[in-house]
Length: 265
Image (tube, rainbow, N blue to C red; front, top):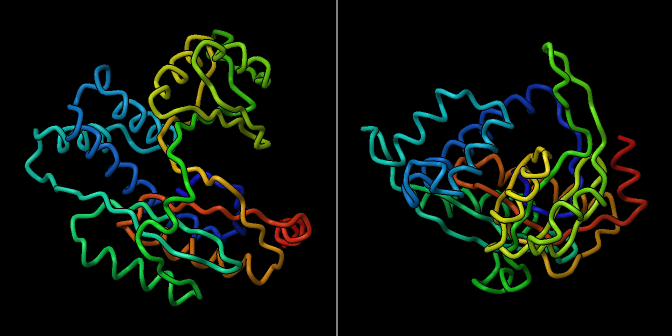
């Protein structure tokens, strides 16, 4: 659930990946519950819920789990929980700004876990507002470069999506930027235009991986050593290990030699 940044995480063993997968499921389910509680349980009339459900499906969350989350959030379930959204702020190595989005039913537990994750790994908790001012809220739609195409008779093929194709599809939807992230494209827009951009992509017959409002840094802080990169990686990993943390955003960018060293590990 790492937030939008140019941060490249290090590799993890299968056990760690499986553990993170379980936590990711829980965070995606929580997002669905909150979206349903705020905007109602009908995805056709609640774009935030629609996108939360689509993201959960893309990450292989079982349909039964999704349906139960919608019911809990919309008041049909008997085990609903009231969550509070809280933003925490911190600094990591090399002055990297860290914005931590929390969704919790226990404020004291959430701040305790965030504080421990940051300070035990060499970071510092920042004063309120000092970090958040370095980020802007943006709509982010992620589209996979390679997409499957149904050719009939239960057969599929793949095709490559191009930046020009995405630009043409969204030219009337107020896209601010399209960035090539390698295996994916990221389309950035004003949060109020997120549904229009996502809908334009779908209308062009293009599948998308996720559509959500996120925080994007207004400038990048360069990490120039592997040691600093690994320290930041430990902070982000520890934060994401907390059930109360929904997303972590940083303004970190790796110097080319650092990125190359990490990718060769």
